[in-house]
Length: 536
Image (cartoon, rainbow, N blue to C red):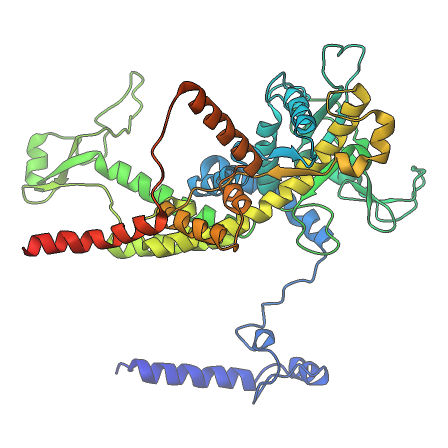
């Protein structure tokens, strides 16, 4: 006699209650002794509930160093593999690079004299490779803005990046503008096996500890970084780590907790979701590819097979190479012959049903949440939401991009400009003070605003009208509007002045702009006029 679902659930609940009553006596006594018993009316937090379903959920309270020692290598390797082979992981990283860096964060020294400011920017452009040789890159392959994008990718995927500032030999580099260069060092080159957990060691004179390749003082401040000369998987015999002073380096990583000295990949939450989704889609694509090779199926009876010849049903291969080895291959347009009454059945690829697409979208949205991105920004699919929801998603994403832009300013732009300005003053570049004057004006010289890329408006007409109203009523400034588009208001005014002078010099005149209020009223009345004309 079959049970109804209600009876089955009631019986299952009785079994669970019986199992809870007959728990091991020592376990129950231990819980009662420590106040961990959770029977009857539950008090406290539901997240700390202890029962049969949660008794095996006991996460370890490991330190960040222990977690990094145990999981960082495999976690980083999986993240790099996903970025190379998984389109969703690659999209997440590319979205951050495109929105945070784009073509680079541009410097604007906060100097009142525009000529001095222009001279400093010109010196920066010559050294960085924007208008000259790629002196900023120690390898000479990239300019500084390309290095900035690569640096951010290393921070996102690898978990961190060490920027080492190198002073080149001036005797062999006489044609350089400045002897300063930069080297980007990935996480794999940290000497993780150089850890020393005590403050005194017989083979070292220093009393500092080394944690995951980072030598720290008693207060936790890094003083040296122990780095391998080459990647550990390169073919090299030079494996002895080198200690680089923290004064010549800057290590950037996203700190997630107190006591953390090394970074984790930004994709750590989404790694398993990305891998499982990629595994599923790979299988579906392979199944579709194999099935699409068969154009039709001709079904035959056993008698037909016997008439067509021996060897077709006994497993003897019909296609062999010159050595008699069987060749199993598929190609488009294959016609398969199978046993059954004579029929021709069309074949086709495996196409996801309608409910399967909803499941895939759910997984994609979860990956977007894990990477702090909206579904539209991650998948580049803007057809699933309304205009308002898409605009809200874009505004929400920009809040997160601005945090990474500020991270880039603090960990890449400002440390680089500080060393560049020092060497520019030493070399006597135009716009920079002398080296003696630089010491007294160091904060003034290094006070630089870094202009980040902006975003075009999703609804430019309405946003432009709103910006005009805010500026006219003192609720906003032109700088807020112009900087939001990735521009500078002074550069904009200078360009407008040059355009006006050029137009006057050439005798050109342009029509005046339409008043936004009048344009709004005309736009609002346009549908009514058209509707009235249709009625007439």
